[in-house]
Length: 176
Image (cartoon, rainbow, N blue to C red; front, side, top):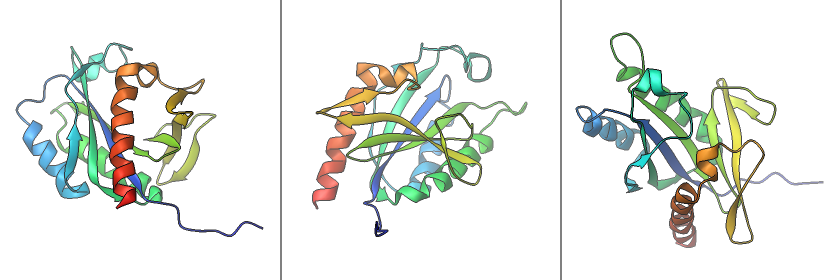
């Protein structure tokens, strides 16, 4: 028999896709900090060129920034985080209702990186509030490993190097 136990807290990571948010960037960051606490690291802009899926809504060119928050969170709060990031997207949407940016929260542990999504698919596990967990990367033998459904951008070395840096931040936090 397995005995249920509370899992370790995890590192909250946020992917921010955007094209032109200069006029609202500071307010968006303030909202994120107010909701989730201080940001420990935010990456430099990375060109987002793997798909044209977001081009019409966000505009082009599209860039991504990755952010890691200082406070660790319980893993079962990921759906609540996704609901809050959706609310921020809506708050700053254009008059026609289109988004100005896309916020994709995820959780990072020693073993894996999981994204939250509102889209059901065969490999995704339902959590709550219409949110599914997408197991995006596994950590094995000192590096991240992709899965058949891993998004192409998360399979790239540049993004995985950022997540490795965040994993080291996480290791230091857990040690404390």
